[in-house]
Image (cartoon, rainbow, N blue to C red):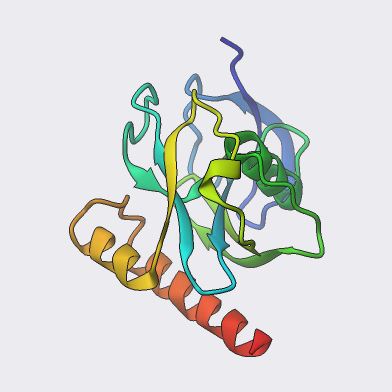
Length: 174
């Protein structure tokens, strides 16, 4: 198994010139690595969510957002584009993959992206080592899954921002 090499960033997301290997080095205070999430929405307003493989060390079998860590040398867009394609087989480009916001967490800078597509679940190419299954859910179904702990709880601030940003995008497109 290949261990991912991550760039160590400062609090502003600027590379420090140092690197770490996934799971082998603990980041110090003030050191961060870049993580991306991609929220996928249909033109009708439904969300494409994925259930993580049972073999994953972190959050095995949980329903969650598409995403992962940026590898060394990647910027946020490149990491989001790669994760979306690797995990689900969805191709994107700068014109249709929009960055919504960044949240600073304990030792990660989490960039959240948005893409609209009407891809059918049967057309997805799931990366079995990462993704067990995927499905479309309505905003109400997603909210219920969050409340019932059936979807990974990224925190109140996270979900408030997600729903607010996506509502703004949908209103702008209407």
